[in-house]
Length: 142
Image (cartoon, rainbow, N blue to C red; front, side):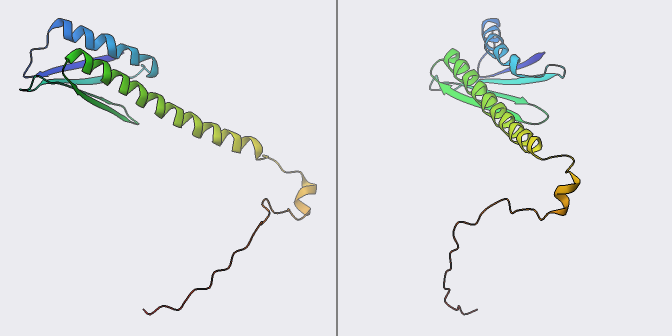
């Protein structure tokens, strides 16, 4: 289960704000393995020029997700931060899945037991050299 630590600087965190933050960030729960406790640290700030900044940090054992957004409206900032975090998670999961697929493909094509007849024969090179390039270098002083 995703837990929330909502803090406010120069603003009182109302129930409506807390509920909205939880509502937007619960959409991220589908990406987590919830067998372990995940805590989202949310920091809400309001500046003198009435701009609102939202910072969200979600520390995970293998990754730290962090996003911040500053707009004129606190609710818009919360929306943008949740979208940024979702993009980060999707990007990370895509990268992990791609790497695991590549490893799986390599392992799939490597035979575990080579037949005895093939060991006696010389193995053909795996790659064919297409072009050699020679470059003349001028001598250099130390």
